[in-house]
Image 1 (cartoon, rainbow, N blue to C red):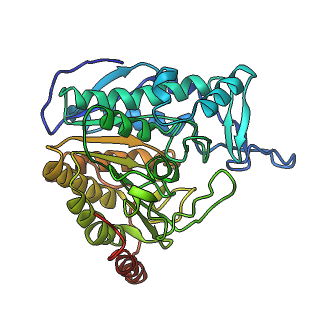
Image 2: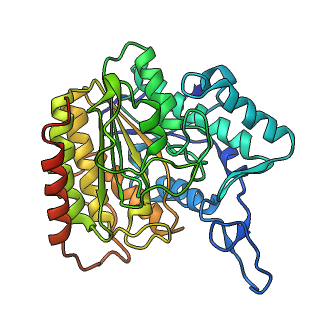
Length: 379
């Protein structure tokens, strides 16, 4: 599903999968993400999930100081049969039909417009190609640089700007290829509800989500992301939600990783690790209320590197999700990948990153989550 531009399998190298066809998805303009024009504003917002944010991620990886550590690969779209490993046939038929009819709003703030379905198929194909690159032994670290995002898409419905669950499809590909246990760590500021829902009854996938404590936002997002959503049946104890208070910041996030994420991964013992990244948890994002800066993302990347090194022989798939500050999101991706490479010193300074932190309340919340989860996670 992809043509390689490099055969390097060196561990301190990242294989980035990207196809500019994903830029064709256009969510339009309105009041923030609503698509609504009230008629009395001269200037409307671009929908936050717009192509500019991804263009800057591409350009910083091509021309920024991390570029020598990157090789580029050109993926092709997923086919309908690929999608059925995670999504129901009825839902895929709904998407195909909506595309043929010229598009529709699938749920609040989520618009399938002309060009959107093609981009969604490319995003799914890009993520599957990235995982297959790892599975085939061509590289240890791959980054699926994709839009539209996917982690809110559930097996049978769209949600939160997402049509197809890119990460979920890749996880299922790893399982179908003989991997026994896959760990998913989602740091997007919103709950990775679609991925969790897809594996909610499985003990083969540990889904971990660190997110703003936003709760349900309607029929398309019935999950709350609360600590009591632990999984069902065989999957009970294999969904770890870490809802963090607004403004948690670098220190709070790293504390959550050290107290909750890292011990859970060690107990689970995955043979594949998937890091789902969204920069909407940054201090300056319009769609989140957390306060991560480049240094926080860099430290998270280093932790992910350590977990993959210990448990999955360095195999790590990174999947792009949100992040809506058009310039700072690109810097935060750069920092995350620096951490994943485990570089000894930062390659790029933070242009705006000072943000005062007080992690006292966050630490208390994390300790409360740890106490609640102690006897419930069946890892």
